[in-house]
Structure formats: C-alpha cells, structure tokens
Image 1 (tube, rainbow, N blue to C red):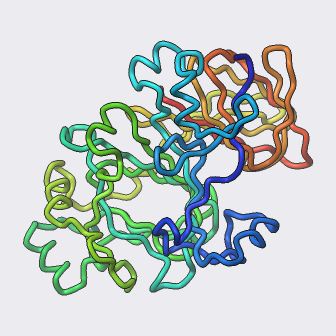
Image 2: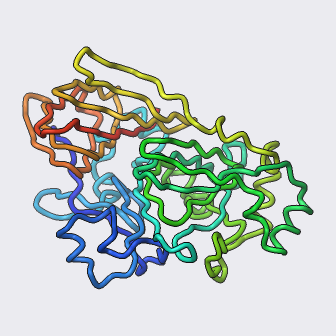
Length: 354
C-alpha cells in the first residue's frame, strides 16, 4: 500500500436512525443542493459522521474495486495503516471521530438531551470528552451549573422542571470553541450547527459496551421537547456527577474555552493550529493560502476538507481533493504537501491519537 485512503460518500444520520432533532433537507447545512434533492423524502438530517469506523454506522472506502466498510478495511490492513505504536495501544481502530451536528430551528424539537459523560478516572465506563467548534453564528448550548447544587436540590429541580434555569446558557459565534470534560453537564440546543470531536469505540471501550454507554442523559425535555421513553438514566447520571469534585459545582465557562496553540505559520499566512488536546485526542486546524507541508508524526491522521480544494503531493504522486473530502493519511505517508487549488483559503481539520 502506498496511497492515501479516501472515504466514499457521506455518512448521514436521519430520523430512520432515531435522530429526530435534525433540520429538514431543504434547510440542512450538512447537505449540498444535489443531496437536498436526494434526501427530499426525509424529515430530519441530523448528523454527518466523518471518517467513522463505528460498527453500526461506518464510513466506506473502495478497495480492489469493491466498496467496503472502514472497520472491515482496517481489520485486513491494520499494521500497514496504523503503524506499530497505534496498533499496540488501540488495535485496528481509529479511536476518534468527527461529526457535524445540525439541529432543528424549532424550540420544541431541535434540542438534544441534557447529558453527562464519565471522565478518565471512571473505571466502569469509557471516558468521552467532547470538543465543539461552532460553524454558525447562532449555536446555543447549555454547559455546567450556574450555582453549586446538592444532590437533593438537583432532584427537586428535575421534579419541578426548573433544572434548565440552573444551567449556563452559552451562545457561540462562528469559530468559537468549547471543551467538555467528563462530569460536566451539557446539551446542544435548537438552531445550532457545529463540529464535534470525541472518542470512538476501540478495544477496551468496546469491551465496556462501546461509547453508547458513555452518553448518559440526566433529562430529555430540553427547551420543552417531548421526552423520549427510556432515554434518561438518572441514577447513573448522578453517580457520574458525584464521581468528580466539580460535577455539582458552579462552572466558570471561560475555563472550558481551549487554549489554541500555533504550531506553524509563515509570512503568507499558511498555518497549523492545535485547537483541542485531551488525554487521547489532538485536533488541528490547517489554513492553506497557497501551500503548506504537513508531517504525519509517524501515525495515522484523519483529514476533512471543510473549505476549498487542494492538490496533495506525497510519495512522489499528486492527487486532487475537492471540498468536503474525507481522507486518511496512513502511517506510511510521512509527509504531505497541500496546494490550494481554489479561490478561497482552504480550511482543513486534522485529528489523531497523540
């Protein structure tokens, strides 16, 4: 193998997968004009999963003329793609995923449940920090408590339906970011469009029941939405909140704004910025005005071309990548050069295990 790995097609989640809170096709930020026509009979375009090796909702690649799920492709080529270090730690799994989330504008329909995830010290469930960057000017979220709470106060607020009055309501403009640690309550609200990075199932996490068990709902009537049966697990949510010292404490939201580190910048403005880093996920934003070289750090990297088209030069060959492309740079590609082939600044998101 000596080429990059291209994802074919978009991995879209709709009401058929249980995602009822997305925008209708004609208003979707996830679909282009042609896709809006293709999906016209759907009600809810909620999420796009990017470079997903999830067992239930995988992305696909072409291999030897056949379309194959990414997870099956990895099983057949793991060491060549990941390299020894990643394979030893995570097995034939990416361990990370990027998603685009686009919530319905209706107040009573578009908000997600109020959730809390375990932190890394919670041994019986996988840790799942989340990283958000707003892709619109009107993204709205709840994040953390406005005041300290006791467990009994929390139960009282849930019972009398005033729990959302006790949360920080945060509005995000385009490009603004938040890091959601384990043990911090949060909910994405109606009319929002954002990118999210989080852990994806791998090895020991699969043994714990995959990351589905790491998303625990405290309430499901966010902004007046009709709650879904069986969605809330209040005892487990409270247990996770009590596990960390800050779970029921007042949150200073400014401390959840990540520090952005500039890794490279030249006189023309080509740059690489580290926008998120957790215990096991790094996310970079790459801006290409004319061209930029990217070292692959002896590991596999996932790439999403959010804006613009590029030529990518690597291993003595050149390939054209258009806007919206999802690609993987395997372990054996040590360095790649990106050349801007569009009239605008190219924006690429890259994520990998550190």
